Image (cartoon, helix red, strand yellow):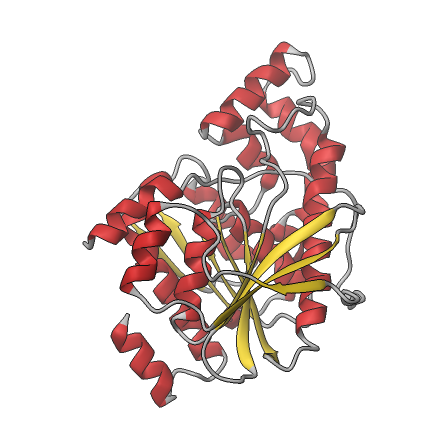
Length: 334
């Protein structure tokens, strides 16, 4: 185990969430119109783990900040990193974890760039159920709106990417960890311009995840909701949440995804998104390839780079890159 693999732990405060507002269909949404694209440094997060990675692996050839009005009218920010060469590049849209900083997203994106992919990671505006989330525990409509808007904004971003000369429009994928994996799976199912994905520690059945998760913030969310009489108990929480979460639950749309398109990676002893939830998603997706590591949710850290590598291998296979000399050389160097 490398020192970098071990140290990534400080950046992996992961998790999930719930909520959804309205049924979305698989029809194409209009791409972004004239987002503001400006050059930026190849590293955004100020964290020792990112600093170490940059010294062990080449940085992106170029990087851009992409700003655009979100579905709710507020500014949405994404960070686009490109590998060497003119392209068009296969491209991965990376979704954020539930709370904390964006170290996991940036680390995932950097690793993909080192495998020859362009990667764009989307910022979250606030944590769900975290210290900066001041909504009432029973405000499922607001939680739902956050997640629905995020997926819609990601789809609009994908539409714009598909028009760019740097991007191969036939090789666009989604990826994420924990809540990011849930959002990535839902987006892949919704967005016809996305063609593959890999999801780390994701699951389906959002009401059950909210009911059972042992993540500290979600445990506190349940306790506050019961104390405020927003719901009587965890089972009542799940019953109330279902009408809002089903329109954003990857289980709702998993039948739209071919199992060959996706890879699941989970932690065997996960108490945040329990193995039963990944099992439910695996079944709904038609039993795609599913890898496990012998850890809990936050303890997956030593396997993080391995997991991203397996995700990149999967995308190489789906996109027909696994036989290319350049890809083989990049894989050998990782």
